[in-house]
Image 1 (cartoon, rainbow, N blue to C red):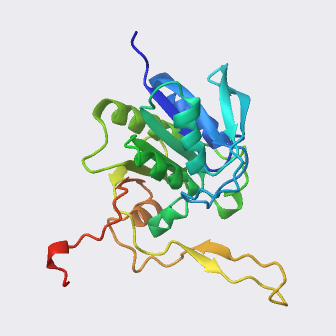
Image 2 (tube, rainbow, N blue to C red):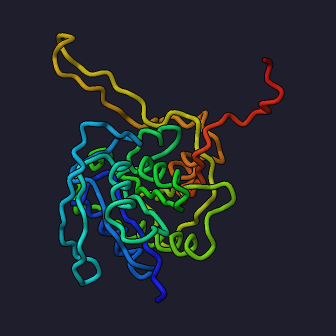
Length: 264
């Protein structure tokens, strides 16, 4: 018996996300879709695995392309969710992991904060080809799960790259494709191979409070000056040239230096 490719769909926004459903609908024609996502919002959790996560699994019916499929809401971070998906829920090896479509861009060095990317860092560590895809939105939508956001263009590019990965594999030495869609993109928008910018993209904003023990989590805002942003980076591609940025990532965090030349 020949099986269709098994495609695990996850995210960090939670099982109720329109972006998650859009990702599943985009990948549905390419294989068998398995949706495993956090029960609640998990943005900003990176690849974390807190021991306090319960790991309980709840079946949910999700409408995909006119039919209902059984999906799984898992108590945990995106990295924990994909572990449950691959090693407990799936009945065979996963061929491709897709994380997204995220509300809001994941650009520059902050990708290690992103739960969208964190899920794929986890699955790539098991040598499963992985895609993390995000759509640029206004900050007000980052945690909103709003139905106002149109994910159709992002879904178009996701299907293109998912099919490409399934047929051709990832580029050499690559574990993850990170795809960033500008908010004004169309299916005809150019896409470009990019590097991960080393410029801080989201910067902390100091809270306003009267006493140190008042509640006051740090806020954040995107940079507004691009003077020092690298021209071949994901930040420049999305924010300045307004093209789709496709960044090949690896789990190898080793500095690109000649180790033999280092002093002992």
